Amino acid sequence: MAVPQWEGVHPLLKILPVEWNHSIPFGLLHSPAPSPTVQRLIRAVAQVMNAKL
Image 1 (cartoon, rainbow, N blue to C red):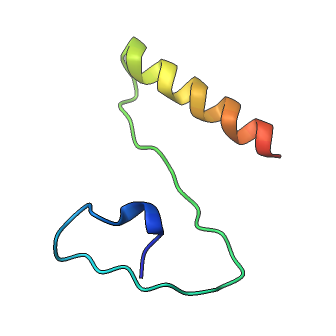
Image 2: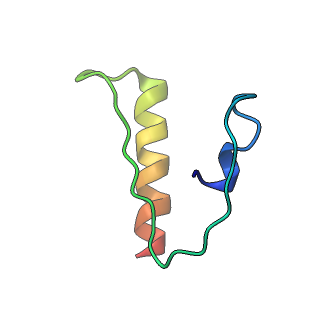
């Protein structure tokens, strides 16, 4: 079982639809000293997550 956005990620991954009442947490792994590009990504994700609170 996976989120619909993973469809097409791998030919052996099969998406099974379910209707559960919960969210799927996620996280970002990055170097202790991220590059400027990764820092921009982290800031963008933080903005999106703060907007949803």
